[in-house]
Every structure is written in C-alpha cells, then in structure tokens.
Length: 152
Image (cartoon, rainbow, N blue to C red; front, side, top):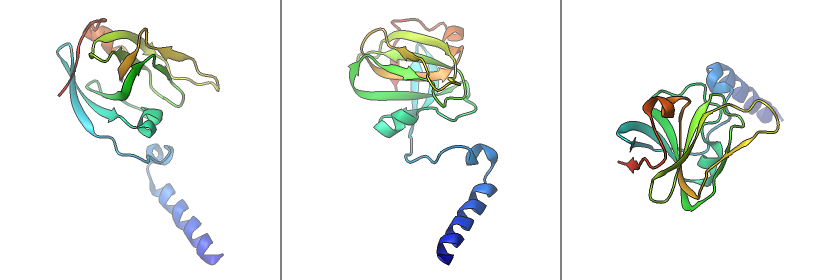
C-alpha cells in the first residue's frame, strides 16, 4: 500500500511539473515521422499518420499549427473518408486526395467541434491520402481539385 501511494504521489508530482499545455494532453502512444510534401508548388513539413492509432489521434489537442506544417493521413486503400473535429482545438483545412495523389475536394475552414455530437466532413470520391493544414491556407494558396500531392 505504501509503495502504491508513493507511485501515485510521484506521478502527480511529475504531472504538476509539466507545462499546462503538456499536462492537459493525453499521452501519445506512437511517434510520428516528419516528411516533406508539396502541393501545387507549396511545400509543407508534415507528420505522417499511417497507423490506425496515429490516424485516430490526428491533430487532436493541438493549440497551434504553423503555416508550413500539417498532418498527412495515409491509408492502405482508397475509399470515402470521413473526418470529424472531436477534441481538435484549432480550425483546419482538410484536403482529400485519390490514389493517384490528385486533390479531390477540400473541406475549408473546418471548425473545431465543441459538442458531444460532431459533424463529419467527407471526401467527394474515394481517397487514399488526407492532408490537414491550417484553416484558410488552401484558399490563400489557391489550391483547387486536380492539384497534385508530391511526397518527397
């Protein structure tokens, strides 16, 4: 019992010593690799979410996303993809790409979900890749369906 109290006390002391931004986020159980990509001449450094757990977590609990950063979701096959913004704290542009890496459609300025029931945002056709970037960036860069995704 004493050892258990010690372990709980040590855990609480560790959590309290963390910055509020880190302490409020659930623990990450995976490591994402960074990759450079290009969409229509615009470069991004993205985290690759190519495992089920990484895709489930996505950009949840993030409070900031730099203009040249994002997350690329990579799936083993192409199908209609449905995204939601549960536990996502920042608005995003969600770009859906087919197996040939052509942009299918964009869910622009997708708002965070602050309710228990969140809407979904879907690809207009089967998608194999989905890119999340800072909200408004797709419009500012003039990205349109048909643009190509290049993974460097």
